[in-house]
Amino acid sequence: MATNSVKLLVVWARPFMNRVHITLKIKSIESEFIQQNMLPKVSFSLNPTLFYKKIPVLIHDEKPICESLVILHYIDDAWLSGPSILYDHYDLVSQGKDAIKATLEPVFSSLVLLEDAFKNCNKGKKFFGRDKIGYMDVALGYFLSWMRVTEKMNNVILLDEAILGLYRWAEDFCADSPVEDVIPKTNKLVEAAKDLLPKIRANGI
Image (cartoon, rainbow, N blue to C red; front, side, top):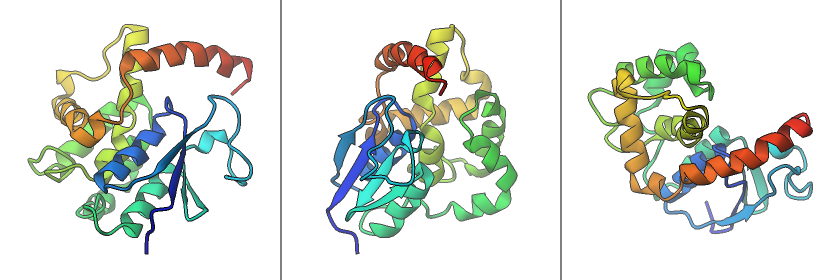
């Protein structure tokens, strides 16, 4: 049975943590957020097997759970009182594992594949086969904040009404209250990116 002893190791500018943060809010789970530095590795005592690149880390009753998508499954299984984000999505997973795997990669060239996946499974609803945000929406929506940063920093448009289904999904997803409260503002992320990128290159990351 899930308890209230929940901590989350995060770096605010890292998009993967948004997946977990949104899910915690959907499930109404109170948790302590422990901010980590941008570049140093995660504390060995809290996360002995994985390094910084694996953030976020959920710590439940002193047990670390890593990898954002694994964490989503764990939260949905451990806290049954809130709405499930997994329900109604197993049929989507079974229909096209190869296509879904492609869309899960945070690569902007996969937007067309993601649009196709959305059209195939949305069943006329706002989200991926559901009227409310579910697992696939959270799993994929994490990239939207950094996509906007890429657009602004490179003066390009990656997602517009030319990809209408995905465009509307992104608008609805970002406007949903659990998401709106979590995703960092674009300008703040742009400043973080300007500061972080030179450090990443200098450290060979």
